[in-house]
Image (cartoon, rainbow, N blue to C red; front, side, top):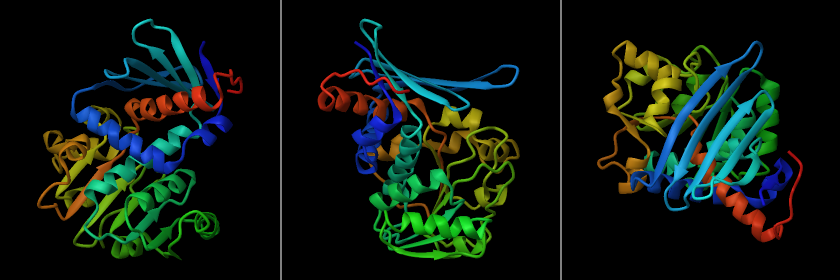
Length: 312
């Protein structure tokens, strides 16, 4: 019997610490060749667009089909042997959780040694997950936040200071965030670059979260030019969806053959010696959906005792 798992139920079945651990293992499995995936594809209708991507895990023999359109956002899990649907899961919460967790994994392996200051550019919904994940992966003591709206900055800090214990502070500019942060998370829905890298520390990890479409842009070519290493959660997805990297490669600032998949470092350890400035591009991939979705399904079976949950 297929389970239908709604957003309220999924929130009770997994937390960020577990999600970071699950994605760490998932990237190790990718490194071992146990996962196959299809990058995001988009199909436009008259008014809306549906986005789909898929993954399969050899060890579980489980297929994951992620689809989202407007406010509808689901994962369907299929048994690889029988083809039967195992679960349909609302991904409204889980998609943001796993995106944050992916940055947490990247920070674990790519952040500067003894990184203690996190900078946030774009204090929105997704940034809440980013902060929690990075704080779980690294010993963050100070968090500097910049957003164009002072009210939103204040609200974000008030909300997140109850979740992550740190010295929280508002920044007055992107340059201020760059100059003070060991790890910078850029999490916006911008179509023009918001971070230029003019004031970066000598050692820094910059993670771009929002530029997951060819038309989206969060960081400038100037910032990318300063990077000693470029990493993506999935290079094939980046070639289609990472607007900043697409532009950088087309203009000769970067080369696709030099973009390294995150699983290489998760599977073999952090790069040694560590490059001073590293750029991480998060695309959001179905492998991540499969990791958290399977866990939620197993927890639902165990804790809900196979009851059918009907709210989607």
